Length: 195
Image 1: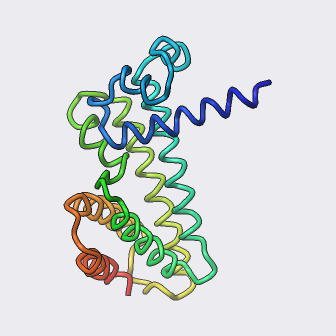
Image 2: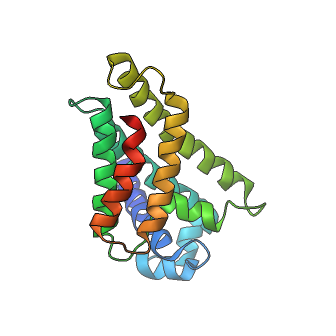
């Protein structure tokens, strides 16, 4: 009996994630969510307690998806550095296919909500999400250094932060809808320090 309820909740989170991603937190009202989800606002409040709680769960859904994509790309059979290159190629593909220029929900949220003192809990959760992605890069870079793919004088901690900052910049630049050639040239420069 619990299985259908879980499926319904996941569907609501997926659709809510798309709405928040497209319109932002402030511009996604409970009424808009209710209309899109074909749910009465009272039912949404009953299930999630608040728009903020629904948003946090939708953001978590996005994070889980992006983390799994990252893990699959980084932990491939072609080596850690090639995994990083594959990740950035995938990122370029995503940006080029994103016709609405939504960017990244995590970065959009950081820009909209987590700056200043607006919402410390969301800022802290985003920080943990970004640190988790940084850790995946660090592990790949450490593996590359141990296997001799990455020069011993390269610091995996510094490079992991550098790559994470690079993703943020690339995602924001992608919202201007540059061409694939421009994105690929930026990625080429971004990955140059890896050797």
